[in-house]
Length: 293
Ligand SMILES: C[S@@+](CC[C@H](N)C(=O)[O-])C[C@H]1O[C@@H](n2cnc3c(N)ncnc32)[C@H](O)[C@@H]1O
Image (cartoon, rainbow, N blue to C red; front, top):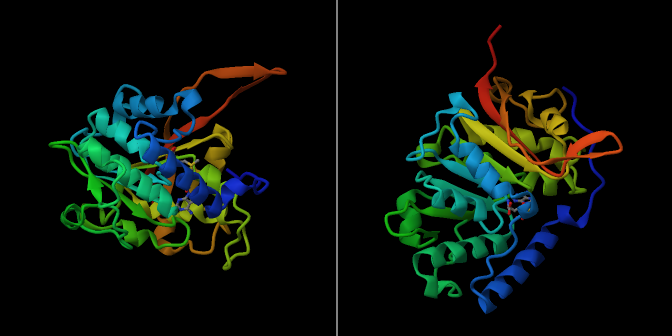
């Protein structure tokens, strides 16, 4: 499966754009605590559909996810809404949301804090800024997490997926990877960056797969949702083994793995000029070992 052609860059591919957006959302939230910010792809009801997809074992019978223990890593978490939605749907395992925008993490932490004590939503007392992943105990001591009574903590960390080593997110029980890695709109944003990888001279979107693959445990899932890429194009980016010349850092370990498609989320489709399409696409891949020759 060949890689799709890169997209025309836009401001949505810049950190400045996201910093400004979340600064505005923080201000809005401070004025009106019930304003919890943008939920991307809300018009397609993506969040509910993703949660239903993960929660309905008949959709993907072999996934066998335990609601009690499944760990989730949300890449480019924004306001953390997808993780809060999963918690509310009964998923009780470890959850970490990462984003390269400091303001996004500050916002998500405020919303997390508001889940425990609604009056604290505009306080900044819990917004310490750790520069690396910590153990669950450390996180709780540092007050960087939020939970309702008896709820496992949800942690939010500033982390640049492309420029920081994935190892920073592989700590404690997740040293071998996360059970489910989520991306809702983040590969879309990265696909719109004009930046190039200094090692290869190629657009940074082309190194995304090699950055996220180590974050998924063997047998774990990568669930990606996009409005910029069709299902066929997402397959082109993610399905199969690491692609030759795909990025600068494909090491031996990376070559041992591939992503196998295990499911898709159904959205309403439309027909236009005889062509069928849908406004967004979500594909679910499982990380499996390549058969040794
Ligand atoms: C379209 S928004 C989606 C936010 C969230 N996932 C949601 O569905 O509401 C894209 C997110 O990706 C984040 N992002 C873009 N490039 C990133 C990078 N290199 N590392 C981490 N986060 C990134 C942005 O800051 C932004 O929060």
